[in-house]
Image 1 (cartoon, rainbow, N blue to C red):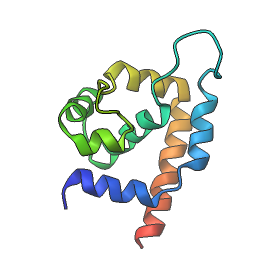
Image 2 (cartoon, one colour):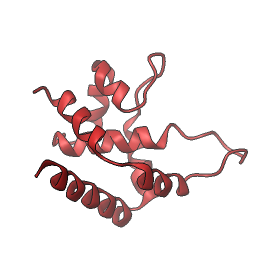
Image 3 (cartoon, rainbow, N blue to C red):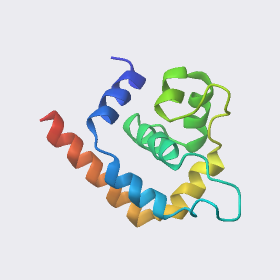
Length: 117
């Protein structure tokens, strides 16, 4: 099984509804001043793929997002959009916070293990 297909299968088994609420809390509300954020859940999915595929850096996942159409679709990147920049991934982690992000990831991994076993 190819890695992107494996990641798609895994993400399809996970319930991300509660996670989406937590992620959106870290961003400003609609009609607030400032530039609207790039799809926070897409960035989150890119970080999940990075972890599942053991990709060593944000730069490497961004390189893969340039090349792999399936991975782009999985991470909510439209065909005409540039992939996420490494700085967007870093800012996302700062916005969410390391502890919260680690708890979310651990919860998702436990959920995944239960689904597989």
